Image (tube, rainbow, N blue to C red; front, top):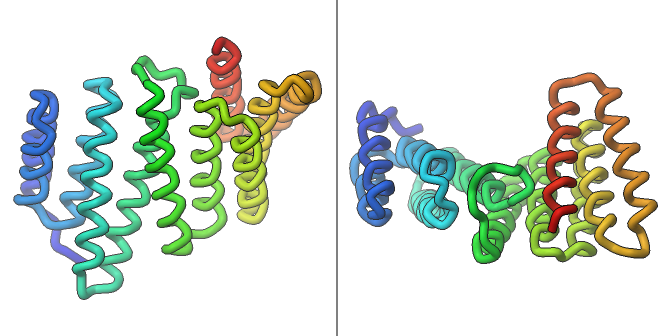
Length: 239
C-alpha cells in the first residue's frame, strides 16, 4: 500500500482552480506530478465531483473522469504489487461509475446534459461494468453497474434495451439479497416500458405497485429509491 501524501489537499485545491480557469491539462499534470497514485486518484475524484457540482460543467467533469481512469489503469498495469493494482482498478471503477451517473438527466440536478454527454456517460458506465466483472466485485456492484447502463440507454430513448438492462440489474440485486434495490430496478423497467404504446397502461400500474412496495419497506434507502423514481418519471414524462 502506498503512503499517504500530506500534500494531496493543496494539490486538489490547486487542480480545481486550474480546472475552473479552463486548463484541465494543467490540472491533470498538477495531480499526477505531486502525489502518489492512490492520493492522486482521490484528488481526481474530488476535482471531478466539483467540476459537476460547483462548475456545473458536465463536459469538464467527463474529461477529468477519463483522465483519472486512464491514469489509474496505467498505474495498475505498471504496479508490481497485485493488491495495489487492484486498488487502482477499483478506484477507476468508482470514478467511471460516478461520472457516468452524473451524465444521467434523471436526477433532476440543475445542470445541462447534452446528448454527447449521455453518450460519454454510457461509455463510462460500460467501462465501470467491465471493471466490476474483472475485479469480481459481486452482485450488488454488478447490479448497480447494469442499472446505470440501462438508465443511460433510457436517456437516449432506447427503451427496449433499457428494459433488458433493468431486468438484468433486478436479477443481480435479487442474487445479492437486496430487495429494495431489486424493486428499484423493476420500477425503472416499468418507467421505461411506459414509453412503449403497447405496454403503457400495464407499466403505469407496475410502477405504482413498485412505489407502494418501496414505501412499505420503511427504510431510508427504499424511500430514496421511491423519491428518485418519482423524479425520473416526471423528467422523462415531460420529454
